[in-house]
Each structure stands twice: as C-alpha cells, then as structure tokens.
Length: 135
View 1 (tube, rainbow, N blue to C red):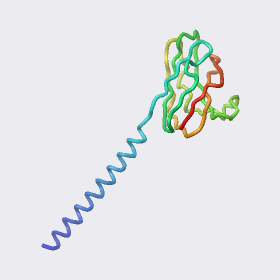
View 2 (view 1 turned 90 degrees about the vertical axis):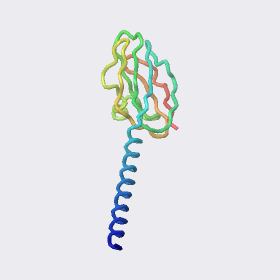
View 3 (view 1 turned 30 degrees about the vertical axis):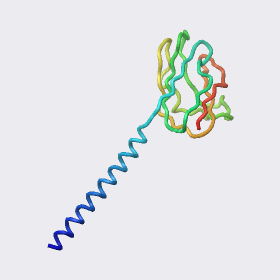
View 4 (view 1 turned 90 degrees about the horizontal axis):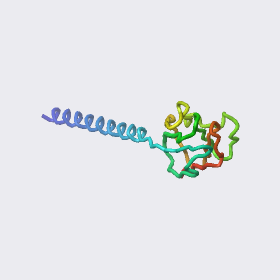
C-alpha cells in the first residue's frame, strides 16, 4: 500500500510540475504576443501627431496618408543618431508597403526601449523633429 501511495504522490507531483511549467510558458507567450499599435497620420508635408509618449514594449506603427497626392512612408531613428544614414533607421518600423493616398499601412512589430526617437517621412517630406518618447 505504501508503494501505491508513493507512486500516486510521485505522479501527482509530476503532473503539477508539468502544469506549472505549461502555465509559465503560456504566460510568457501571451506577454510576447502583446503588441500595441501606434497610429500616425500624415497630411501634406507633416505628421498630425508631433509627439507621442508610450511605455517600453513592442509596437506596430500604423501610418495613414490623409490626402497626400502621392505615396508616403515612415522612418524611425533613435534621437541623436544621423537620420541620413539608413543603417541608423529602425528597419522593422518601416511600413511594409508605400502608403497610397487615403490608405494606411503598418510596420512589422518593433520593440522599443526607453529613450527618445524621431520619426519622419522622406517621401512627403515631413519635419525630422517629430518625437516619440518611450518611458
């Protein structure tokens, strides 16, 4: 009888451990799946949002072209880096296709860490002093 109780206890311990590990993995995957959207709008020669503040995390940029009669895009660079050098651009933040008139496009998920970033559109062209603050 003692062997049966020991076997049941060992089985129960294994099941509980496995369930705990599965729950931990599920929680980590759910956290990784939490992607927020930052929506930005461009009109002729400018972004309508000059400054955006968010918490550190993973974001998708959704860029709308509101009445600009040609394609627009989106470039994000850490503040202080040379904007003219493509190697400083955060490539995952690029919209995945040029944004046509009265349409919107999105970027890939982009992980943002604490700091300041500038965003602009060289196709529109917009000011390069639009600020994204990540707390």
